[in-house]
Image (cartoon, rainbow, N blue to C red; front, top):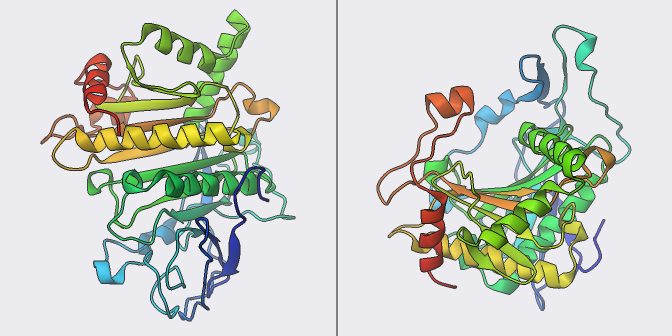
Length: 372
């Protein structure tokens, strides 16, 4: 499924074990995949499990098969670099712009057209579990092993956003998928084991805990005020102004009033939409520009690139998440040039965050980092 406004459709082929891989190309470029000649093991019967936690109401994925995933390979053995002869990496091609493929070591798998799935009733037994239905994909932002998202041109970064958008539409159309989450982990401090510029896309069979919490507050806000919570948050931040980092007519980026992380920025389209598919071309260009601007400011804060997590919060637009609003949350554990914020007792055990810097100070420093 290709959403309206996408400049060119992806070229789809398959890897040696049957997984799909989609090539997205810049204008004037033509993908040239070759056969994947690796002797990969059969994936039949490799499934994770989800288990219901009665203490919290959360679903937990148990994916023991991920223990064997690739861990910090040498640069010349990177599984995300191009493989011109189709023998050494996950991308059988002499070059590429952006690719998306099914994760070889997925937390969730098996979601496909025509394959129905429903979550079991948590009240049906004391110990409730199900197959780990869903899909996990890897998105490579560039074939350049030394690149980063921040180093991409606007046109190239927009291609990544188009790929996110295409995969969001396709995954939301699969039976049993409740939420699609695009994200990037950057930096060893975050736990990254592959340094090639890439992110991931998860299709969950349930709404994640943070999403359920935000939607519960949004529903309560609607009942109390008759307005949307996310729209009111954006209006309040723009009106206050002290935490705004980038103020674009179509997109705004700000450090949230109650930021949890040492460096945290939220990016919202001014028009509330459920997901990337709902944005028009001008909004997509603006979102790309502001996102690049913020990432480049991140990398100017200190002498070395800032480790971060980028999380694209989006919703299906169905009744269950109708109050949701597409936005991107960026967060970093670095609290100074030489110190990291570790999620220890209060944060990890009680989910009670304690911040070491004020959001207003972080916003001032990011504004001072200058435009890209």
